[in-house]
Every structure is written in C-alpha cells, then in structure tokens.
Image 1 (tube, one colour):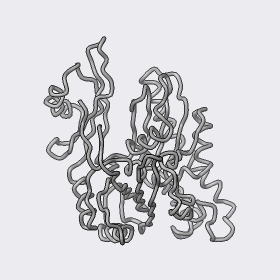
Image 2: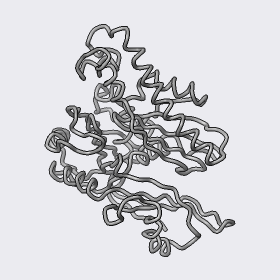
Image 3: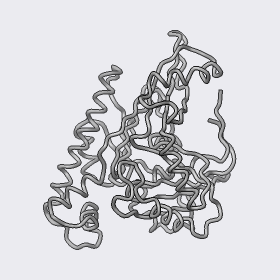
Image 4: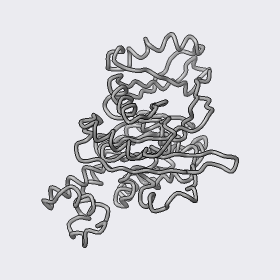
Length: 351
C-alpha cells in the first residue's frame, strides 16, 4: 500500500478494554501524543461479538471527549475473519482482481455475499509460474456493526485492519523487517483470543487464532479461590493494591500459561512440519498477558526460542506532554492501537 496524509487515530476495541493511540509524524520522527485506556464491564464483548453496544459507545465518547480529530482506524478479529495464504498462477494485477472472487470461493467457508474480500500479493515465483497471495475475508455484518458503533460515538472510521497485521506493522516499523533467512513469530495475547503470525522471507507465512487468552487466567483464579473478577484480575497482575497475593496464585497462573504455551507450540510445530523450515529465530509477545513473565518463560522453555515483549515505543517515542503514568504497565496492551495509528488517511493499492 502507498499512503499519504495524516495518521489516523488507532482505536482497539478489545473484549475487556478500549485502547486509543494517536501518533504525530514530523521531520524529527514519530511521537505518541495521546494514549487512552477505558476498561469495559464483563460480557460487553463475547467471542468477538458486541453484546452491549451502549457501553462501548459510552467508552469511546469518554476517550474522545474534547478531541476534534475524529478520523479513526479500527480493528476486526475473531471468528468472522479468515486469513489464507494461497498460490495462484502468475498473472497481471488486473487479471488477479478479476480472478480473486473465484479463488475466494474455493478457500473461504462463508457465502461470498456475506463477506468483504481483500488480498495482497506476497511473492512472485517466476521459475514455478506461480505467485503467493494473502487472501482475507471479513464478515460484512461484523464490519458494519463495528463501523456503526464508531459512527454512533461521532467518529469517522476510515480503515479497518486485522490484529495480526497491526502487530506486524509495529514490529516492522520498530524493529525492521526480518533479515533473509530469519523467521520471526509475533504472538498477540488478547483477553479472549491469541493471534500467531509467522514472518518468513519478509512476509506473512502463517497465521492462526487460538481461542484462549489472558481471561482464562483470571477465570481460573476466580474459580479456584471463589473470588470476584476484579480481585482475580488484580492478583493476576501481582496484587495491584489488594494486599498480599494468596500463595496459590502463582501455581494457578503457571498451570494456565503452560496450557496456552502448549497451544502456541502446536501451532509452531504445525508450521515447521508443513513448510519443512527447520528453526525459528525469535518470538515477540504483545497484549496485556505479555507482561506475565511465566507465559514468556513457558513459551521459551517449550520452543527453545528467545522470547521478548514487543515494545511499541520503538515505533513512536512518548511525547513530553503525555503523562508517563498513563502508559505504566500498558505498553504491551497498546500494540494493536499503535499499529492502527500508523495507518494514513489516504491509502491506495500498489500494482
């Protein structure tokens, strides 16, 4: 994509909170000029479906109170989104545009009338007469629900992106594209969904959603100790002013993160087995649960690959006027919103 104009404001509506990032670009580089965080009550969003739109609209209105610029980039995720890498014969951009509907019919398990389709050419393999194309389908109903929410909060949705790609934007802008022969894994652990995106030869080689996330830890603490969600959430993050953490909590956390690390490992093993690749270079974790050391250690132990937390402040440094307390402990949660904030007002597909 070629892009120009001002950066959009990134709005990440997750299942437990809304995150907002605004980046300003100048000759001296990018600055994060605004970060907003608004928690959502339980069951506002379940399995990616918005159950209580009024609460989300209210949250957006609070976050955009006194903000004049309203052009936003949103993100879609969950069961209504499908990402597939497909191989097609070499063809011109015009031919591909004509052909893509037929290709989508073969690979997308939804009725094409019900979905928005997009695609991007990843590689041309001239010697084999083929090219790899990334095909994306998102359910129209879910996209329009998301847009309607934003419009109700008096926002102007200009772009809708996907979790995996927003995290990839942050990685590539902050760390540079992986070197040839380097395979990097990006794992975004949201509250209810974990997205795995493997980058090989500079592009997406594999993506998978795992229906498990940080909320599973909270639920297990709640269940084991018979306590409320807020208390369990505080214990998960080391107490947060709730006094001494019960001694069972570290074991409960370990048990759940081991399970999640096992699911991540199965996805990586599947990728390695089906591509014949031999090793992975590095793993970066983002999302609120990335702050839990036990998860990073469990993934590193199982895979034998170094694991780091993805730092979005490598993309844009914190503006001097932005209160550092706002970002305290929340940078890993800001990654998707930061990736969205990299999108521009005018974008066009390059041939």
